[in-house]
Length: 382
Ligand code: HEM
Image 1 (cartoon, protein in one colour):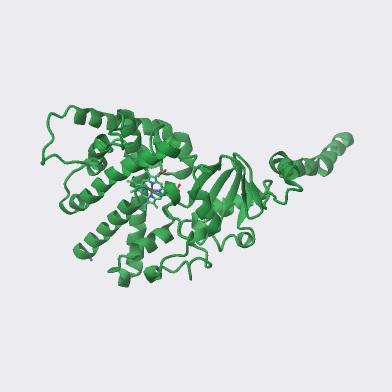
Image 2 (cartoon, rainbow, N blue to C red; image 1 turned 180 degrees about the vertical axis):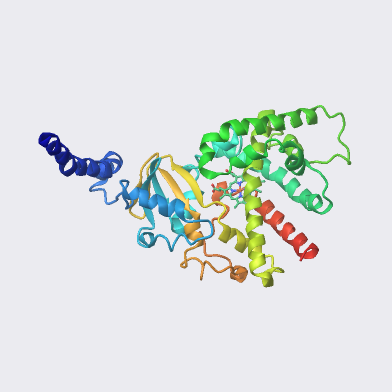
């Protein structure tokens, strides 16, 4: 009896703290310490931070801040550490200050977009890089411009184009699964099968369009038509798979994001009715709603920035929500104040649509949709 009590006590007093300490340091020992050795004497170092138990605390800072709360007020620690290392599934650097945010997301060949392929399909513009991305982006932008022009008509007369029809008809049975795509952390787990279903739905439409015998002025030219018809510099059209991959990406990226921003716009307008007539309300809503709280990249090679090294294959996550709610970037950031947009935001501080070569393909469309919604709401309803 006494022996087993002794063994038990020895465990509690001796082994458990050592195990705890080991667990606490494990990630640091595994990921950070070898790199610290490698960088010692080079004049650069890893970004500050800790991947041990404090990563839990940091995770709660990171994920716990709601869209509508100031990330900054919840994380005083970040006031000094504006770029820090942590573990989010794999070694990551969280970036919270404008200049690097701007650099991070702009330099595609160094810091690559890496998470969206799951939602996009292999040939979509969110999945390809370099020249292929440039071409896909150009072609999608051309088709989005058609949509952009048509959407006013679409909203005012409620004509049915593909995007509109898709919500009403095609997705009825799928809407539930489709919305799941946007529950951020489930995204990685479930996107593939859902994406495949969406692709199948659009494939039927694509086949119908290909079998169409004539296109005249009464034909509604929609986003899919646009993608089917655009040509690159040498007159080459997108393949069927490329059309499908891109349309799924545009639909996935464009659906919940704008719906969420519109919902926030209604909320703010209900709260601040005096600003209804001002279009800047859209920009202010998007800043405060923080639909895309983060922008994700992967370091495709070792990057040095302001004395810190970001190792190859580490994730680099720009914390947009932090930028948008930091008083250093926006005066009284939690106040809904469209007038702040009388002046442009300081460079790099407003990253709602990302930036650089990967800037959101639907940014103007999203703004237009929200503005149109607000217009109809303000002229038609009290
Ligand atoms: C309020 C609404 C929206 C917000 C806040 C938003 C935000 C974003 C952000 C932050 C990115 C990542 C940029 C980066 O990684 O640097 C992005 C990418 C993208 N968005 Fe949006 N978006 C919105 C609406 C839309 C709409 C309506 C569409 C299309 C119809 C769209 C299509 C895309 C596409 C295709 C990309 C990937 C671009 C690329 O990799 O080249 N988005 N968006």
